[in-house]
Image (cartoon, rainbow, N blue to C red; front, side, top):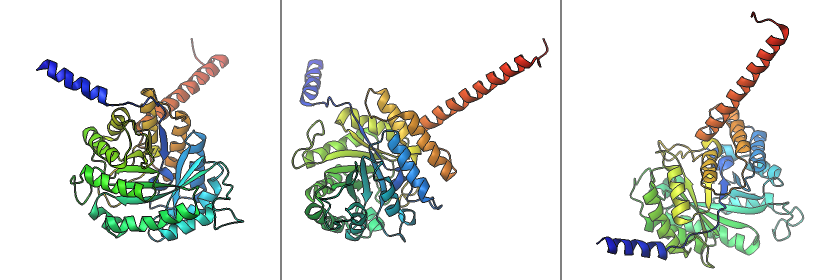
Length: 371
């Protein structure tokens, strides 16, 4: 019996292939996903500075805004201004577009002034531009969030992706799938097969990358791995998450409602070789259609964990923490990142100790202490 178990275990190990790539790409979503539902008006210059600070910290890919209805999402109404100002600062700039009108608005900003009908002749500084569409694995969530069925949403996205592929071949397309591990309306009744079907359709219409989102933060490592394996099999990604000609790369996007986000990311990286992770500095964000859902997993916490695992991100953690502190101060709230809280507390303690030492030295020099 023991021999049989060992043999079976050995077969499982041999059958799996692991990536030797230790680099993990962080996709920073705070300027869009993190801020879009904030009710207070955030100054446009503060959004621009946040993005510039994130880029300076070493984050290469940043979701900078959304070309959506200003009435529906007023916080994103200045995305045109923000994107224009940061185009030279961000290596890979991504924006959310829900439909053809959103695409048109985005292309007005991103296309060259001399030839607004073609992005093939653009000179977009150092940016690799990307647009993103946003679907769901839950029918009810799709109806409540974007007022259509999953099938109808794919048709809408196809209109967008067809235009991009024909007229803007340099623009990449990212596809989001929400509610991959649970839904505020359907509970945990979201199967891996349902997620895989949506991911497969997004790949078919031209998405080069699929971000799988645990919108309400109910996932666990085991369920995360099961879902990822099902999706990878559907879109053709191999055991090391390498994209084939007919496949897309996979990213994970976790909210931390039940405190499982880091555990889920660890499982995705170590067991399924996921190398693209969405995160939001200071843990900003949340889903207005998911009651009780907390913010996105904090970028600082993800980077700290990954560096501790021996993974590379190219990100300066201290500068990242300062970027989170900046936007938290703008919002008048504390960072949700445990890593940021610890580092900032250590900085404050060090600063206080230094001040005391200087005070003691000054007191000694003036002889104001009695012997």
